[in-house]
Length: 611
Image (tube, rainbow, N blue to C red):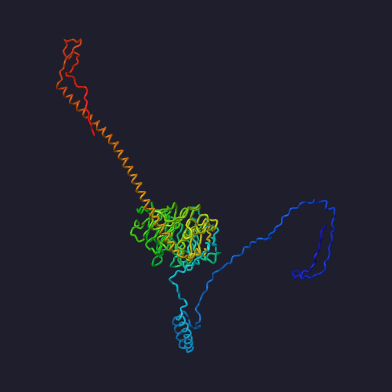
């Protein structure tokens, strides 16, 4: 049975507000129960029913739209001048100023304003409101907050074919922009149609890059000029060095010639401390470090071959992966190689062989990160294979500190610019590790899973609060660390210095002991070799003695035989003996045998005693 009730309403009344009012209940239909229908059902006894005591809650997700920003320029024109005065004409403005200065109202206004300004200046001279009473003491905030970090923004590669974010560089003025180099480092596996562009991002606008850089080959490295924030230096995959001036646009301003460029991808570029601010270094896996001046990019100023045998042969050179230059040590620079060796160089040396000062060996694979401690330049950090190591220039045989071997490969690392005992490392499993040597040294103070992809590069902002991490799929994640990790702690400089000095002394003691052990082993091996030589000499002496005896006996026997033969010739008497012979024949025709008397001696014995 269907119950249908039709509501009839005019079209003009649709959408009007409903006005409800009270009225008496009205019975529309009454259905009486039918006992026969009960036979069709079976009673369930007992009945189990669950009851939820907690309040019912629901979960909702909402995807908000991104707030898009646009940059607009403002053309500012100097105003306040009369229409007949052109502010760009110096003579007209000077003439107008002189005319105004002669006006009496102008003189009265200046006099009144001068009294007010004089009163304010006297107040400032009486009390210095900006005076610092405790300049000598370091302003240190002691925080017991647990180390933490949170994601602020994510910058994704806008291209459809994703590329690896290979290098990051912060804007030197204000750190409000981030330059990211994108490239595919898999040899001969770059997909067709892959873009060569790299970008400069504004931290407040992650939707769209602010500036697009268009190189001739994908960029592997990209660095801001610390003296001129409009100039960027890039190392290309084809070995060329490119330079941009963003005031001139997105195209390359200066480009090195292929004939004088690297033969392999440029994995390291770094600006040098110079008067002009235009000098830089570049390093590649072809084993060369080139010294450039961006004002003349036709050929490098100097080329250093990374041949640790000091023969300057390119075939024996070690491939360079990372570079380090500290402005406080202007004559030194360091190179991290593919073979796990750090080469310390002197840029002021006369020959290429003299430029290689010493080497530090400790990694089993390429050194992807190399950086000096900003507070203690003698100590430097290296990241390669499965560990991060801290070295001292005074200890060349071994690193003074190192992390445990991780399950995932380490890809990059950097010191904190504000805390001398804090450094950061990235791994292939997408994890960012923050190490605090003051807090603990065996494990990281904070390990954060940034993304599911492999992290490839890392760069810390100058104030130590923000960290940018680039992934293998081109995603750059911006992280903000807690204040405890970005604020200098009490006595941290002294503690870090004592840690480095203590570990350096320990390594020196171990080096001396290892050197003594090596000398002892060398002495033992030399002693064994001397014993073997003596045994060989003894064996050889016996052989020589026996041989000499044989030769001596041969000489004696030959001499005796000679003497016997001579004696026999002198004393020989032939005697004819006849045994049934015809004596009528002459001796020449008869068969007879001569016998000599006395008979020759048959045996001679000579005994020699030789010592």
